[in-house]
Length: 581
Ligand SMILES: Nc1ncnc2c1ncn2[C@@H]1O[C@H](COP(=O)(O)OP(=O)(O)OP(=O)(O)O)[C@@H](O)[C@H]1O
Image 1 (cartoon, protein in one colour):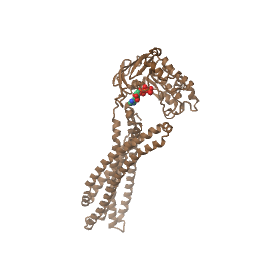
Image 2 (tube, helix red, strand yellow; image 1 turned 135 degrees about the horizontal axis):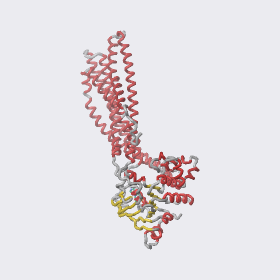
Image 3 (cartoon, protein in one colour; image 1 turned 180 degrees about the vertical axis):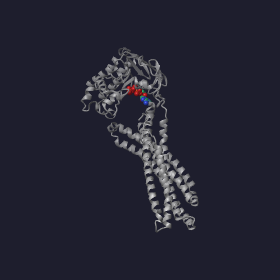
Image 4 (tube, protein in one colour; image 1 turned 60 degrees about the vertical axis):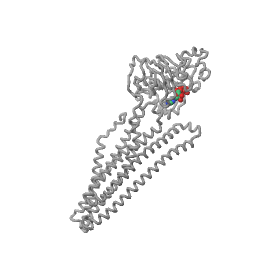
């Protein structure tokens, strides 16, 4: 399987399915003609097996019907499997498109909604264009052949029957349009309900702590009630449509019997011909019924598909893997913000940075401090190029990062955040995630970095050791343990630049010491920007940058800044509690 999910070859599956479809349809539609012949033989020679004709015809027909049944079974099997293949491809392509989108896209589109597109909409569209299409093609072919055969058997009767088709088609078109609109709204409502459930289940600890389970259930119930109302409208439309088509079918059969009886009475038709005609009319009726359900499913699929195409075709606002790659040998890791102005795309009216400038020399440690909400984490997001500044430049070794390949840029940057996110897999896999090619990472490499990150000892105490699964987002580990795993992960990545966000909460003395020691080892020989919450970090940094009112207001060593009588840093130190461990 390739990354785009196109490794699973369709090969001759679709032509084969169409072949089986043709064979089964021809056999099904030739049956009424031959059955008419059988009736005529019985009718004209009721007592004898007219020279063995009846036996031969019946045996021959049984064999042909058997082949028809086998061809039909093969058609259903092939269409269903290729349907699943299409759904798989759609899902992989959709995830590939979603994961390439810029981070601002995820600020506006909720996870639950995207998951719903990935699971429900793809299934609806996939079913609509495969199994449903196959049934529709079969119904269409049978209806066309049936109509042809009706004309062949009795042009007179056929013309009479088909005069009712045009009004029925108009009703079908109106119904189709209505259903398509309804499906889009239903899928959107379903996506909102999934979004709510996903968020509440993902944050069950908060829901539980506030005792909001019943309130959340009520909210979810009202969202699914909306889906139910829409489903009721859809069911009503379907019921009316199917009821009307069923009624029309029966009325048509009745009128055929009426008119056919007259034709038989005037010797213009044999009983076998009338029987054949009736069977064809019945098949055409069944096929038209099949076509109407095909049409319903098709418009539902297209309704679901509208949002899918939008997502599949969306071009990310920021490039994903294109641009200049700097030479690894001469790469220093010098960072510079020059007169940067920035506001988040979701809230363009709120400026975060105004004329923000900061230079971080290669191999140095810069501590960034500032009041809560001043934009410290935003500095990290801009360096990772998760967002682009509105104006000004951010450069790496003198090169504007907008010219650089973002994937390459991120491969040179390691991050350890306040609350590191781990994946629900083993500790070894979480650590190996830091490498370019995780599957090539050996157990020794994992253990080595875990050792340096002061994680190996606690991991070995777990019965499953490095194979211990950490739970969703690492929920089965403590804060200090998660941090040390994240440090090991960053060590394995071995980046030139490190962006650290220290934990705001104090760990117990032992954990504090182990995490600090691991961080010190991680920082060695790299360009480091650290969002500092500990006094020791600030004191050990080469420079401290104070962020206030959207720009760097003070810059220097801890003691220098502290000595300024009216300095912002001095005030910040008095006001904000830094962890003194
Ligand atoms: N994705 C976003 N979309 C819109 N506004 C955002 C987004 N992320 C953060 N903000 C806003 O940007 C401002 C700066 O946030 P940021 O997280 O960078 O602050 P901070 O200094 O790191 O805060 P703290 O010390 O509390 O973690 C805040 O006012 C915040 O509300």
